[in-house]
Length: 114
Image (cartoon, rainbow, N blue to C red; front, side, top):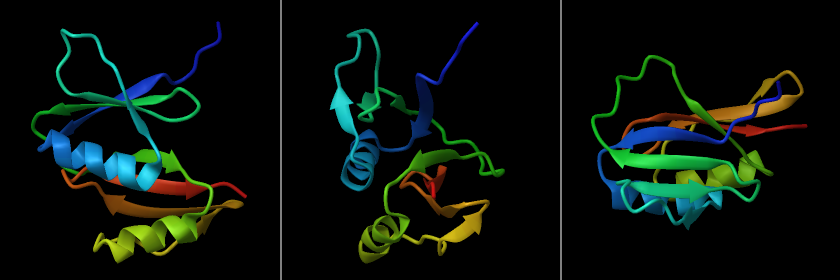
């Protein structure tokens, strides 16, 4: 049986701030959600989604979401120019990765493949 990733749901403390963050820095766009659902649904060009909901954010124990970017150096610069702390890109295999936290405190990895 084949499977794939459709979406991940993240808790955030302020929905508007979180939506603005993900739209601005990661080229996601907001898509309609069923009317009985609260929060916001964001989608990448490949159809994969992040569902945001206002709720308590779990303690950071290393769990994270990895977002694929075309140019990690440009993405890091955009984030740092906006005052967001990002680790410098480091190699992992033939790829590069950096880490940061979204405005709610969720750990994110930005990842560029070779």
